[in-house]
Image 1 (cartoon, rainbow, N blue to C red):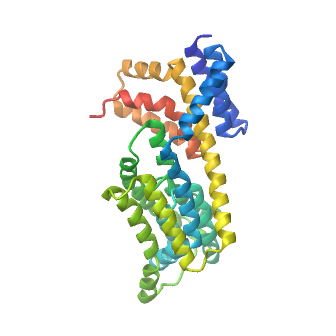
Image 2 (spheres, rainbow, N blue to C red):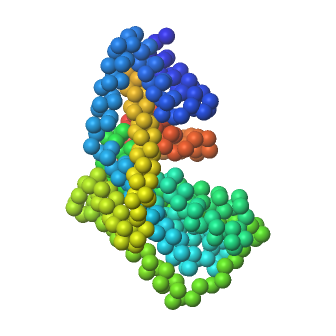
Image 3 (spheres, one colour):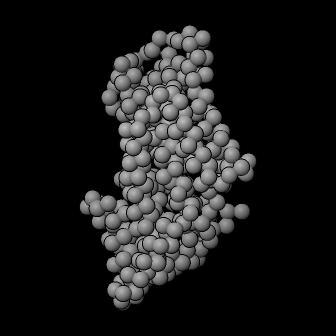
Length: 361
């Protein structure tokens, strides 16, 4: 079997391992290491490449941004930012049809701006918003679907851990990706709210109605979200103003949210240790997935599959927009089956070389 054929067959093998419930990082690691062994014909060569990839990946200074953003999300929860965001959004939107669900989406968008993780956003806002949704008569399925959808805003609205990983793997500028993600993130939040509004009108029994909050109380709730605006403005604004790099900005954000939690009396030594340990576990999981992706990418590079696929796509004469639409449809289908991080890491080595040779003007 040729190297190109090995690269082609590795993809269905990798998908089979994932659908058999193997962790995505382990699946890519096994496929990459096994593929390198078969391509090079030497276990020693494959292990040497593993050593080189491990050092090259984890010595990357930019990777330190990931635990910093995750820690910032942990501290933001302790400082009460998630609750303040939900109360402010609920005060302004809660009295409308489906308003509490819309407020949940708005709070998810706000928390995503200081967290960077969809999983953390969904988990945190579920603890805050789900009891309120149940209290006002929202159906269980509608409530959980709203929070699950709202949680996805954590990977779109900067700062975003997945954008950082994507930037590292494709060697792109992190700040530019943050800027590019603003519009899709805002559009997604608005789209979710419009969908909620339509859904509750078609299914009025799925949502209750909350009493209107006086304007004085709304303004007080709005004033309580100043820490969120401060942290977001300091981190993202500082990055674009050139005060610090994205990595330094993440460290500043983590320190700032930690100090806010301490100032509000919510930070104890036990909670601090729990936040650090949770961050370390999440970071280790993400780092292992990145290592597996890098190893699999190295294997594919040796097989020349991405390059051959790029040349084939160009030779077909497809319009760049057509290729882009097909890729988006593929992501739409795969997104029903796997999480965003796994899907992106799995497809970057295939789709990125194709997109690079497309002329979008």
